[in-house]
Amino acid sequence: MTAGQGITLSLILQGVQGGGSVPAIDVPGLLISHRGSQNQLRSVNGRVAYSQIHQYQVLAPSPGRYPIGPLTLPLGAGESATTNLVTLLVLDRVATAGRPATLEAAAALTPDVAWEGQVVLWTWSVRSPSELLHVEATSPDFDGLRLVPYGSPKSRVYQVDDPAGTIWAAEQSTPLVAVATGERPQPGAALRVTVPDDVRSIGFGIRRDRREAVAVPGVAIRIRPL
Image (cartoon, rainbow, N blue to C red; front, side):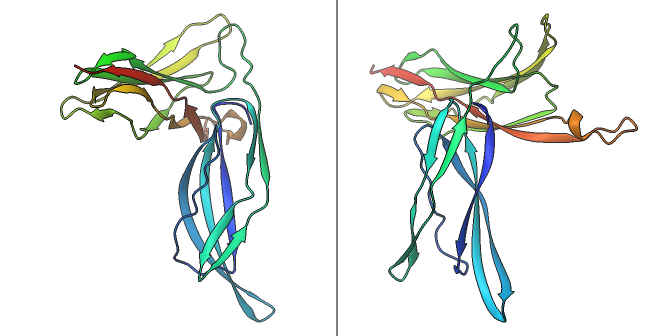
């Protein structure tokens, strides 16, 4: 996969029957969020076999090699299980003449130095070589910043003419109020983007769409006391 894209990671627990807490997966450099769980029941040689499947969305803002696991997971009653090691290889993006080869996301806090109590804007943006049909954002858990009780996010979708081809872009600005002082690095966020899928065209002028996950990098702000 390339930087900024997302994949689905499945964690399968054999012999586990429902309930229990959701296993947490934390890998430096990756944004990992739990997407759902399901229990499976099947018969093997006349015996009932249980399994529990957890699915996670994994986003990689930067290129590199990211080892996931081995993870030791508590199963209850003093028992635990250990997963195997999975290494995620994330390649750098390659673009030509300013036109993104894949979906690209960015974020900014304006201003990046503010006073306690001041309102700032958190803005994410995404650029695409394909038409942006829909963009859905998941806001991070802000540190030292809080949503204001008034106003609402401002969004816009637009096109940019480029010699290499049209660039589709979208952005959204959310007002936040600074409520704590000091250096405050903010975590990254996730976008769910819907674009046309030319590869899966049905024909007769009918085209399917596909959804992609895109990582928005984290940003930092310095908040001064009054």
